[in-house]
Image 1 (cartoon, rainbow, N blue to C red):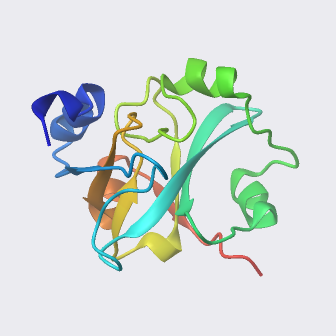
Image 2: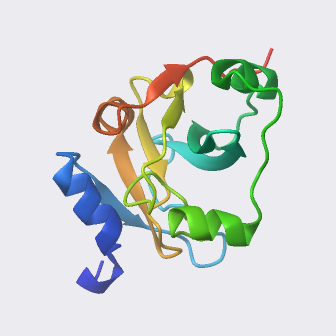
Length: 152
């Protein structure tokens, strides 16, 4: 991978937190990270707006998660997915690339407990590459709260 493809904000933020990250290319057609099958769990970062601002929620990409459990954890009755423009203004990243790594705001991070003990692939702020990282280390680096968001 060429040096120019490494997303600088994400790399600098990870380094400042002592978080080891490997940037892996994404498939040009599908956008999926190119990693060996089963080597890592794909994770999406959902940015949500609620009464106290924004929160970043890390959940398995292919699995559903429980909105009622998430609302209970946050102590709210309502949450709203921001528009693409609002998400960009809040995080500095476009949808499909949003990640805690180098996000513009210092938002609380919630991690689904199904990520524990796994190597995961998250966004990097770039459509060209994704970030391969140890979930437990990412949780530690961002002071994420680990919560049960599995569907019932």
